[in-house]
Length: 620
Image (cartoon, rainbow, N blue to C red; front, side, top):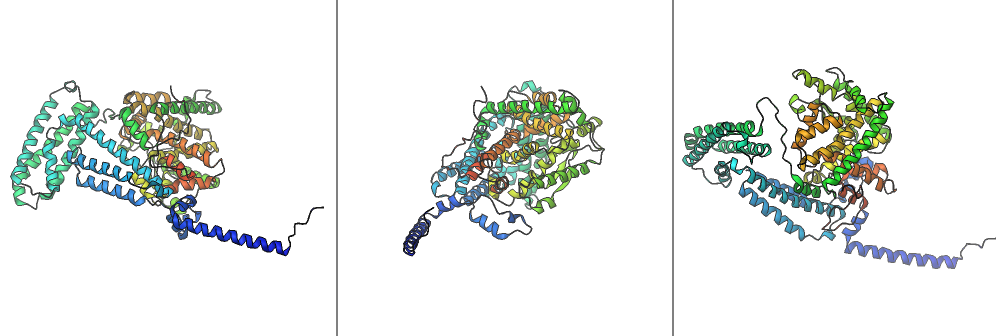
């Protein structure tokens, strides 16, 4: 028989008194801690995800108020930096100007010194994240300023007239009076020099300029166009308001504008190699290994370019294996490119493309709703719209672009016959199947909807594509695992884009490192991925103009999000809905900082990227 657990009244009284005493002491201690260090308590207890009632239309406002109370206490510093940097750029607008360079250098180094004075430990956790992001941004901005200095040296001999022209605008911005007769002489002298340079260029061969690559010539042509716009803005300030200015400057100004345009055209045609009506060669400006290191540090990717190429090649091989599995199911054996050719022939007739997109969007949104693992505001589903890409835009983006207004590529009546066929073959519904949810919901449109409403300053500070493109690609990964495709052609479409994203890692990094030419990158996409040549050229042309790491960010960012989900969801620390909502509500930032935010990772003022989510030993 068990002993009775009933306590006597005296025992109960002693216990109650003892408990009351303990509660009193504990309450007093908590009050003291809150008075002494309220920030640290808030940082430990801060919530990283909103109650889903925020998504209602109208929202439950208390949820937004509670979220605001936990926001970064360093946000105002971030906004101040961004606004001041933009203001300086507007005040000193002439690119490569030594005045602009010096002012920016003083600004960046001054902010670096100010950041060193911040009591990092006194910031809340959201503030510590912003501190690290801002510190990395200032460092990067200073490195890019140095790169501008190097690039100026490469083009300066091609623009010997630029010094006098930039001074016209800078004198005006210094609030000094123009001397009309002197400014007329300045413009006339510059026009004479430009006419001589244009004549010389048109009567020379590109080989006569051995130190001028097409990339350098293209940069010089862009700078001439910038000077033409600068002088136009300067002239607009005086023309019609100052009669003496008009008397002296009208003719020299017109002569100068013509001379600048002629010289710009000569650079493009004779040194870049682009003639009117021809898109010309693909011109890129590789940043090489040193430039890639700066971008990898900004986006907090602790891998070398060679290691990232190894990741891309490994993913490429895995996808080809899946291609062969589906190809066998379709009756094409291991010849997955034959299966791909079959899918390229499934294009709808001209004029029917929007309705195919709407059908896929309806299926995708219903599927994601049924997964029940992310909060989707009804307004986000209501407001998105569809538009068609212009033929000119399709030269750069031959597929899809997303957001509240999502744009689709398909042939127009003024395209050549071959370009019509290639556009249709590259944009069949199975190929669109993987891109509709990527561009709309839960991809870029939902991202934009959220980042316009939560932690907006982080997007302005660091528009990292690893968060932007990585999130949309992450959904491609998990939807594939969940059995999202409706049939084998849909599987081929999803695998095609996944292979394309792995290929982007390989070709874009080899291009930026100077290992591959643009033509080698095009051939790789045609031969190894199965692109139509026109689409491959448009893809590489787009890559050459994008930020150096943009194209690798799709697959690498998606893999980062997948690894983070495994860490915080599979461990039971968060539900999948909490994880997805917290990612979008935290704002755009390097995914390592998303991880720090969700795990409350302990940070310090000198924090450096250290999360190697794919492990080590990736490249020799």
